[in-house]
Image (cartoon, rainbow, N blue to C red; front, side, top):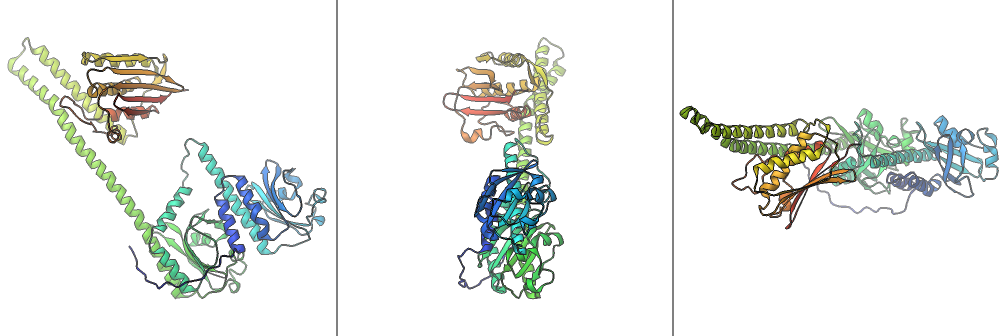
Amino acid sequence: MSISIEITPVEIETSKVATPLSTLNKAIAAMGRAVSFEDVAGTLRATARSLIGCDGIAIIRRDGDLCHYIEEDAIGPLWKGHKFPASACISGWAMIHRQTVLVHDVVKDDRIPHELYAGTFVKSVAMAPVRVENPIGAIGAYWARPYSPADWEVDVLETLAGAAAIAIEKTQAVQTVGNAEKTPVVDGAESAEDFSKDIARVAGIAAVPTILDVVLRMTGMGFAAVARVTDDRWITCQSLDHVGFGLKPGDELPVESTLCDEIRGHRQPIVFDDAAEEPLYRDHHTPRIYGLRSYISVPIILANGQFFGTLCAIDPNPAKVNNPQVIGTFKLFAELIGHHLYADDRLKATEEQLEREKGLSELREQFIAVLGHDLRNPIAAIDAGTSRLLKEGWTARSPLVLKLMKASISRMIELVDNVMDLARARMGGGITLDLTEDDLSVTLRHVVEELQLSHPDREIAVSLDLPVALTIDRLRLAQLFSNLVSNAITHGVETEPVRIVAGVNGRMLEVSVANGGQPISEETIAKLFQPFRRGDLRPSMQGLGLGLFIASEIAAAHGGAIAVKSDEIETRFTFRMPLAG
């Protein structure tokens, strides 16, 4: 679906002067990019004091039962670097009671440790916990005179504390993921990468810049955006800013500070011409925090019913937006964006499904063709032998005929076993193992002896230095090594030996199989472990082309992998797996 809207460009002058609102948004965005608690504290130190207009600011981190004053910016020294019992300081009180505390005059409040404040400039305090539930710190604002902060000053302090809590939790999550080998996916959780994809999806809708331009021209407002909204995140996907609001794609606001959080709950538009004249929003925290007077936001809902976010516009001045024409246009644009996003999702899902179906179709055709071809010879041999025995009866040649028929049956069993392994690997979640403690050296030597009987003219050089007991599936590893050595015999030049080297490197078991011959191209190596890939076949070569695929699946089942290196000197397959314990 696409739209075409032609509008004659009109130059609109934009102010480059930083406003308190843009400074607040930049501070929140900077905390969103922080990678440590110290980064968050540094941003607060650089911005909080000027935003609130106080004489000092302190950032406190909770350290068990202690309050650690880690950073400050003030007209005089406070307590940076010191730790106090949470029960003996106002920051501890705010964290213990999980609420912002205002102290008009420190001299008259019993919660203040007066001896600590006696040598400072502080006469009044506002202290907000960082994360209301289970606080992890606090932000304190200090004045050099008895003072009762205005509501907007408290709102700014609490907004900074809320943004700091989100930023700190994000840095902790990133560090946890970075330290973990594998992190399970939590239902409903969305990563930064997921939101990057959402931003890119919106950016890919060619109509969005036009839509934002149209809504600003239609309403006379100064800022419009498409936002991704979840239960705990508000992210700018695309914006048009003529009033210095300061939000760009990827920037975030604390979701609880926005009206979009309410829209996500009830999925209805919120619109007002002037917050000062609206009983519902006159004292609402969102207009106070962001200094807005007019506002319109409508939900963006995908065709499958999923809530994506909002299309919104704001302005610090009143505007005529609460009317059917404006609301209807916003709903139409939001619906259009939702259809684009859903159609894009469905298109990608369909393309992925087609690719899967194409792969399965090719696999099925290859399976039928190759299996039919490779079963034809042993079936024909058995049929010929049976016919001869029925025709001639028992003769001196009958034992030889029976031996050939048995070999053909064994060949058919091997083909069927390979097909079963393919089915288990593709549909059963991988090849299962029967692990026991065994001597891998004995297994390897048995494999070599069997293959040497089949190829008495080929030289196989073996060098083994392995522990007596390893936790392995002996039969499966025998199958893996048999496939690798058979591959080396088949594709290697007859004048050079097949070289097998096995040993332990650190905590890794390594077994390599090398042969001389023509090097394998990078393109072929990339496909070697795919089923039914048999490379450059010679007439004498047989098999389904499953040997290397099954070998790689056995390696993966043991927690290992097979690597390939090929050049003019040799081609080497190396199996590596971690040792248990």
